[in-house]
Amino acid sequence: MVENARRSAVPSDERGNPTPQWEVFIRNEPGDPMRHVGSVAAANATEAHEHASRLFGWYAADVWLCPADSVERCSTRGLADAADERDTETAGEGADRQTDPESDEPRVDEETEGSPEVRDA
Amino acid sequence: MISISKLLCDLDAEGDGLRYDAAEGSEKPQITDEKQGRPVVVWNTTRRCNLYCSHCYAGAETQPATGEFSTAEGRAFLEQLADYGAPVVLFSGGEPLVREDLVELVSYAADLGLRPVLSSNGTLLTREKAAALRDAGLQYAGISVDGLPERNDRFRGEDGAFDAAVRGIENCLEVGLKTGLRYTITEANAPDLEGVVDLLAEKGLDRFCFYHLDYGGRGAEIVDADLSPREKRAAVKRVADLTLEYHDRGEEIETLLVGNYADAAFLVEYAREEFGEAKARAVYNYLERNGGDPTGERIADVDYQGNVHPTQFWQGYSLGNVRDRPFGEIWEDESNPLLEALRNREERLNGKCADCQYQSICRGASRLRALATTGDLFAPDPQCYLRDEEVRGEGRRSASGGAAD
Image (cartoon, rainbow over all chains, first blue to last red; front, side, top):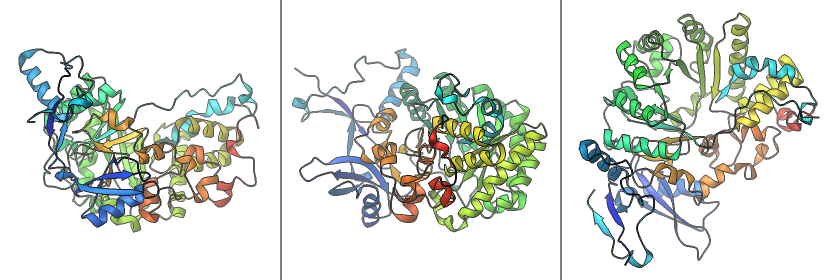
């Protein structure tokens, strides 16, 4: 029996700096998997595509874009979780910073990816 | 960051000692700086600023922005940096002093073994605040002044900003906090350069960093206000001349250049003109070990929303967000073809950069300026001011030919 990944929701509604962020996905060659390669700042999808094309057009066969705040993110190691854990520690529980000795490794198995345990951030 | 004073003044002994046959084995340059393995991380702790500068790469505003890290998130982020082994965290903004928890975050960074340094407009640096930051472990404060009073205040959007910044510098110096000037050279303020150095040196300041304008943030809107390559060369020469004049008078000011690695090549040429071939080779060898433009390797930026950028000026593209993955994981992920390409750019540089004799100490300078002006990430930097014969290495033995030539 493999332990489920303890992923938490990661806030993604405020990613613009302040220009809206667009997550960029590229496919290198036809038949390759899509790969996330960061985000570009752009006012709209057309600008985002132009911007991403300048950065990756020389490399990728396909470029997909998605508004960063439309992505639901769940992670085993989000920043908010770490901050929450640290707050709990400073509240007097006295645990070490690294409370879980296995926390460097995401506790997810390919077989169980379909049933992750998601906690609210 | 290229230290003119180190290259031209402190390297005297090395330059004298470095013979043409030195590379044959026994005699190594005395400077031992190695290319660092982990990046200096600039953290834009807030977007808010009490000024509104026309060249701000962060596009800072006088109103608070949403989505900035809480104190707890800031501490967790600093833990990410410490876990990864980042040597330095540069607290920047916006204006970092508008954050009420700045002293706490600086103290926590120092406790984690990070070297905390500050980039500020200086106007909020009271003596008490400077002392508190010093006690928290702050190692250095870089304070921005961009011209003599009239020009600086126009640039910064507020009357009295110059005097307030100078008071901030004096407060830092009075409490014993190492302090330096940050001066972004543009067409508008280049004439004030010597005046600002003279004025601040009189007040006891001894470190002066000159930034070239990069084309991100509001800086992108003032590309036209940048110096022409010819003017840029003249400005860099003036800084080099000024450095030598001060040192000749026994005033050992430290002068540095940031943001255009054509400066590295220029300083080799300058050293040859002023001191001869041996010094030029010493300067070249030092700069080669220094590693050229650091974008995506020795410098990183994390904005107030947690987006990771290849430099602080490249706010339009993010490699990932530290809210999603730890900083070190993002920075190590060379499955990102852009990051991999930046780190192995030599094989992709085109135009005059492809065969430039100074490629290994410059590395094409700013990829962001090339991208902004040509749309080609690997085109020559439009602010390269080297002459054609310097690029090709004609008319004299190549500086990159090794000390054994």
